[in-house]
Amino acid sequence: MSISDIAFLEDLETIVNERLQDPTQGSYTARLASLGMKRVAQKVGEEGVELALAAVAGDKNEVVDETADLLYHLIVLLAAQDLRLKDVCDRLRTRHAGT
Image 1 (cartoon, one colour):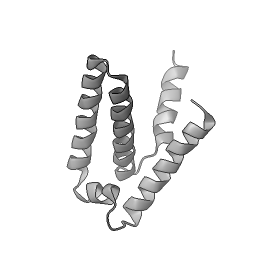
Image 2 (tube, helix red, strand yellow; image 1 turned 135 degrees about the vertical axis):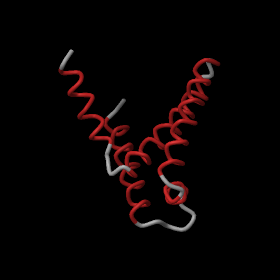
Image 3 (spheres, rainbow, N blue to C red; image 1 turned 30 degrees about the horizontal axis):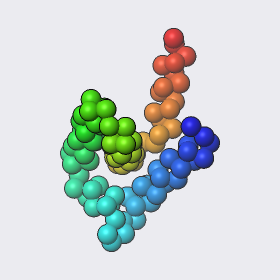
Image 4 (cartoon, one colour; image 1 turned 180 degrees about the horizontal axis):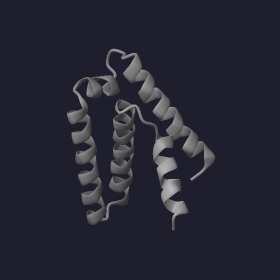
């Protein structure tokens, strides 16, 4: 993974947060969030299951597609909870330091 890949995730997170704070017409992100946390959480679960099934099937292209979907929906869920990817990274660093 390159620095530009990480920067893209940060850019995506910024876009998601902007769409939640100032919803634009036709925005999937805003529409999903307007359905509430239960629906956002369901989407995370659905995408996680689809990723697991793609992995079992051994379809690498589908694994990449489903991982992208899961990452996006995780970012939406985090933003809706007023959390950021940095919060997750901080927790992972803390856990790693204990090993």
